[in-house]
Length: 268
Image (cartoon, rainbow, N blue to C red; front, side, top):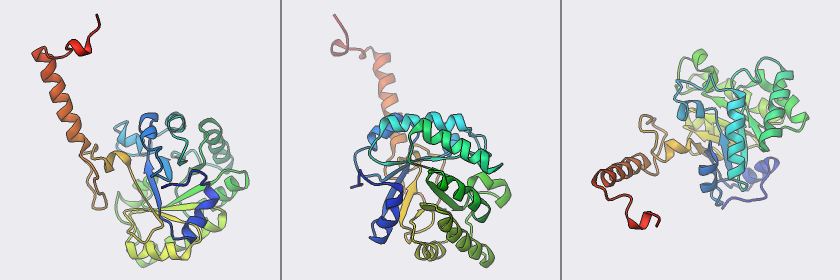
């Protein structure tokens, strides 16, 4: 059961107590209401919505307005979990001033609890500036989707010694800058466990093994709605795509046979 009084600074305490964090992406009020029952600690409005909902090839074309719209919708649907919002591509990389302005707007309009940004040592001044201004930050290392064209695609990061050492250093640097937590995406499990053990703040894994302090999945992937996406790390906990197709087939059959609407579903 999630703690309704949980705050971003409390995440380190949860880690110290050995309590795993449960994180799911969420993009709308309807699903947010379903996830507001206490099982989920953090809802992440990820820029993955650009792929999952908008059908784009990557996260790169997600806009700040797009993220704010969806995050505000999620906040209206759920009050129980913490709400973290991705800062989209180029909304924080150009300058620290841009990052403060854009992250502040996200916080003010959506009433979220933190923002998330990608990158290691290069982002340390930005993370520090945001935290100093009262904006909690979740970091993101390993596979960083906004850098997919630089890192050569969606592949595991940290198998080479030099890259692994850099990821360890980046994680410590983000912690020192004031980050409240760090997502580790597509990182070898031994490396992810090593990074997790080196930090006081929690790591949230996705494709990074069980040694992380929490786990995140994209909700639509976990529910089996995104049939075309089947990476090794994904465990489907439902087959809602099949349920949807069956329901639509049944509806179509009833309409064509004149069974719907019947007396029960009609007005006199």
